[in-house]
Length: 402
Image 1: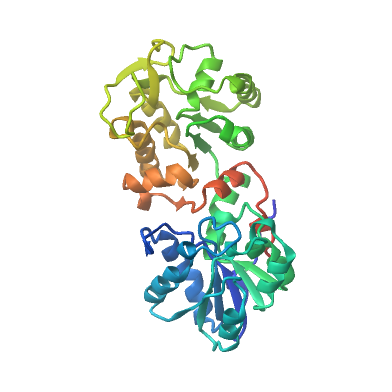
Image 2 (image 1 turned 120 degrees about the horizontal axis):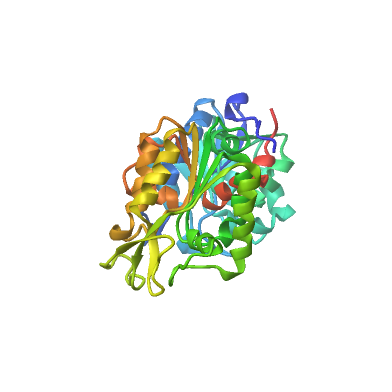
């Protein structure tokens, strides 16, 4: 996997037109941005390009307009908020076809250090199919392409892959660089001992991740809903807990594979159980802790128990690199969040490099107030999972090698 990519620090964009693909896929409520983390995360790269004296043309998708203009998914509110965050006008090019008369005129009129934002790239049907016409339109606007959108790096679209192949200079921004440095290199070239922690509901979502990480890590910890399929594969009663019957043989294979490779595979030794799944998800529940080998047939495991918390925390203590993807239980319910909190706390207290692989675990770590204690929290759910699977990400691969 080629991870040695040219970044914005390797080029000078003075006087050049730079198309910068960001991830401005922010939640909107009645035209107001309700969470601007992604905008803030994009600022360092944008500021660098402005400071260099580039003509900065920003682009992004937002939601799923499915190839046609949907006013409620316009990036206009993003241009307005970015102007405030940058303390500098970000001119919005309102073209239903994205690269239209408006965008062309705005680019034509740019001075060094100016910033414009194009309309939602997914207004064009070609975008998600990586169709050549739209890639050419985007390339016609710029001399240099910068990709800083890790959230879509696992997809080959016009605005991240197609356009990169049509310009001479294609590099990654600071956000992408950080993801490659931490996530990519943690898996390909970790400082050992390397401990990987996987949680979340379904084994099926993590098949390739489990397989790949078993080869790369020293210890693999499995919690969350998917641990019960492993527990059943070991012959335990798991009551009414979540199970994927079609993956029991796969779990047996993985347990064998760990033995064969001499890797530690840690599974829960006890579980916090409830009678019925909470509805709503944060409703009050009565819990009883059972040993993993002695769960009653009418109970459902929804978090790791205290002994497992200790076991997992101990495994983290001696680690030098820890990657965590997926919560240990139904963390949205305060009564069933103790396991996820315990793991977050163990990661917060270790000196190891700690990497949170996007999605639910990123949300959990931030909600629980441990965000600033982690070395790196990935900005992409699907993209970070594919990195952990050892796959090449099209959005990373498209950038020029050093």
